[in-house]
Amino acid sequence: MVILEEIVAPEWDKDCVLVEDNDGPHGTKDKAFNKVKALKARLGIQWEMNPPNSPRSESH
Image (cartoon, rainbow, N blue to C red; front, side, top):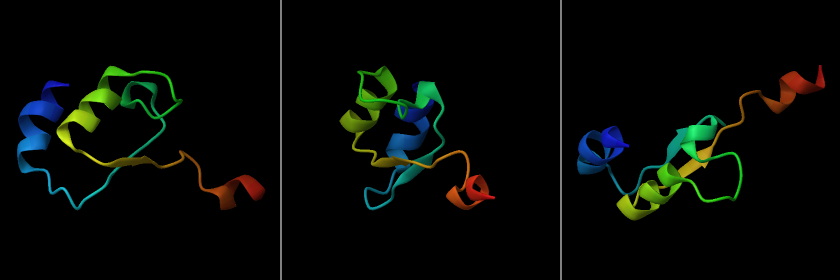
């Protein structure tokens, strides 16, 4: 969380979107409250989850 507050947020371009994997600590796995997800919202960091596997690789 310190990295988000002290390093990422001060230089964050509000027009950018942070793409994260589906790692639990990132707050991307479910709709439940998560400290990191709440901090990203407070800091105005838009994000989206990138699935760990491409949908194409799952169909082969």
